[in-house]
Length: 459
Ligand code: HEM
Image (cartoon, rainbow, N blue to C red):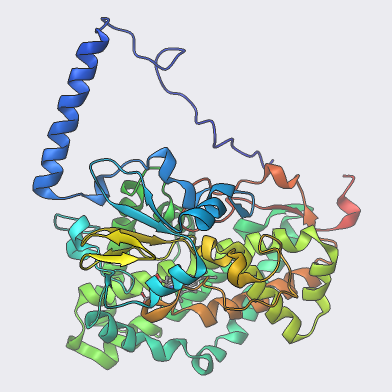
């Protein structure tokens, strides 16, 4: 029922058995000259027009390392880079200069530094219209003073006091989804029936979005962070989802709804443009479900590995649950990279010279497994861990996740409720067969088949 697609071996669509097109044989020297000419033409075009991320359809093999994992763990190469080359130049064609930062100290320093780095990505998305630089919006790709102005508008909604009023609603959504899970048993897909709907319905209610077409958004959320087609697939999904939010904003301009979008329209009126508001709502919407959904599925999987950990969440104190959730956030680091930072002027980072325009990618999964700060055995999941420095799963500095407290609240509600409702919960397939996202900025599981009751084990 829950077949796991083997993503490491994509289905070949090539017309011949060996994946080579048949046709007139071309001498290798001619082929090499043609390739060199094509390379020169593309390089010249890029020099003239700049790199267009929305047209980048692949990531070179050796540069995939910050997004690759084995189960819940980053690949060993990431730890190796952290130990030997913590500011590492990734290989991209056409002299596109990208550095990967993996150590906790260096990652924190980059994220805290607003003087030397910019988040403004517009120069890499030329053109006009949805999904381009003109329209990228949102908080994560914006610098002060625009970032400061936009973030101030939404910050009050995300304080612990304001969020507390959402608690009963989240508890209700969780209870309904657990009922759906029970009805779907004896085995069911937890990712589809719990992990996705809980944060999705929560963020829709918070923003005041009425979304019937859940399937479409489940798909867009996955595509948006997927890097298997380079950056191009992700930016395609950006424009589709953005178009939906533009419509929602335009409708609410005429008739402000009960959620955050309507409230901003009432409070700010013409002081905020439709473009800014749609971008802001889009960032909150996108940040709000795929990340937390990934956390719910992966956390469940991790807790089911050790009955003592599951028991701590099922019957532990509030403080126990908080500790487990913090360790899950560190250990899983579902947002694998922070928003890209662009170097503003020539400088040095940990001894590595950087040039203006270089891209710096901060690896949160690398930083959170750094033995220098995470405490002993950073690759183990250990709720009793005493780190010397807080984890960076929500980032750090002015772009630190605005939804951090909401995400924590959802996890603190959903995980104990799930384990109490189904005390015998177990994976329905061996862990090695789970459908982990192969190359995604936000790590997660496409499906999580679970068995709800022990009595059904032999069935
Ligand atoms: C466990 C779940 C989540 C994780 C791990 C997570 C992680 C992150 C990270 C790493 C950043 C980027 C920080 C940087 O580049 O410096 C971020 C930014 C952001 N997140 Fe989250 N997030 C989660 C849930 C949420 C939720 C529930 C919301 C919405 C309510 C949200 C909305 C945002 C927004 C709007 C930003 C951009 C903030 C800015 O640039 O000022 N996130 N998040």
